[in-house]
Image 1: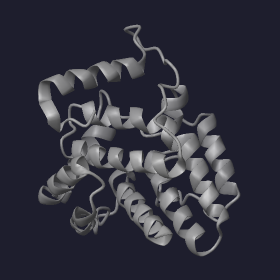
Image 2 (image 1 turned 60 degrees about the horizontal axis):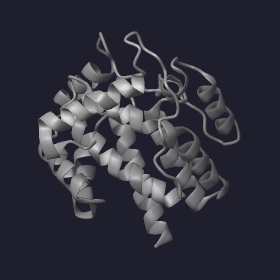
Image 3 (image 1 turned 60 degrees about the vertical axis):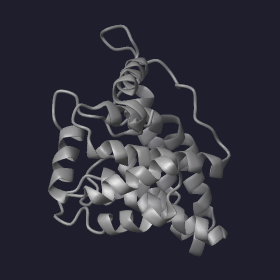
Image 4 (image 1 turned 135 degrees about the vertical axis):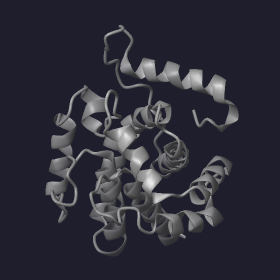
Length: 233
């Protein structure tokens, strides 16, 4: 049973890395539809089952690439993709350095050609989680501890704000279901690691005197009222 749980976690992290790692490669989403169809038989909960069905039935690689670019790259308000930004409000902060220190203990390094983002990019962290769990299962159990450190110190405290920012983005459509699926998985990971959803870690001020976190929270609540039960927040 333990190995089956580890295999499922490896599979999910690998799938999420496909959705969040930027790549110029034409096959960047290869295997995603097949993975979604497979997971339909093993949905975490009812919400993720609905999202998996939506994602599998509406999978279109070209539209997915366009939506990805609109959300994460297009002005005026692209969603930021690094732990540093959600932790300290700017890129390449202490969080990135701390993740580099974890990597220095391992045999893994960021391939700067394949992964053009920093080490604290959420997509890259999903790759690390998949690889650390896989290697920890078969080669060196220390890697399971490295995976735990990545999740508890960097993913768990900041991923909710990241998911919220994606969900409320004006270009988010397909990625709303991606977020719902990710959110269900993150809750399962919190149970696995015996941790909980954190209280907002701190208030980072923006021009209208509301914190970025509070601004996102209000937008989410507004969407919940207007869109109904499909919302994941």
